Image (cartoon, rainbow, N blue to C red; front, top):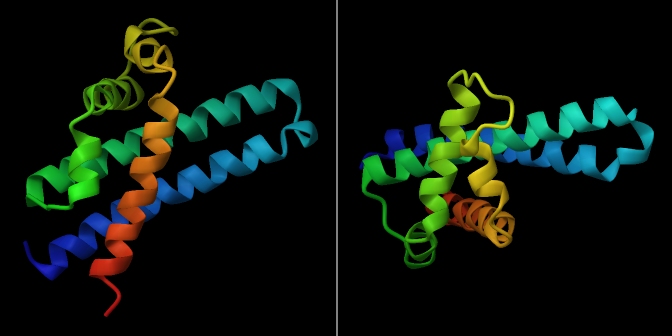
Length: 131
């Protein structure tokens, strides 16, 4: 793994994390947005965040990066569900409520796992790229 490839992967993380921040901002300002606008924008930002986060996972695996906490999180069944969710986001699906979305949505601890993974990836990049 080169520094350039780590910096490149960090770019994808920055994009994912910005989508996370935008999603959280939509949630925080729910009362200032129309119901339809809230439903569209919250689902859009959440889905794009989830999809980009899986791109970071792909890069992590491709670069054969190692971190005890992140590697432990990636052993979860949620990793594959997030991959399927990403595929549903970035590849056209004929059904509005496709099972790629529903399978992840049904998992009550998946959101906590996604938030933890996002946080730990941020920690990793801060540690590795601080110089």
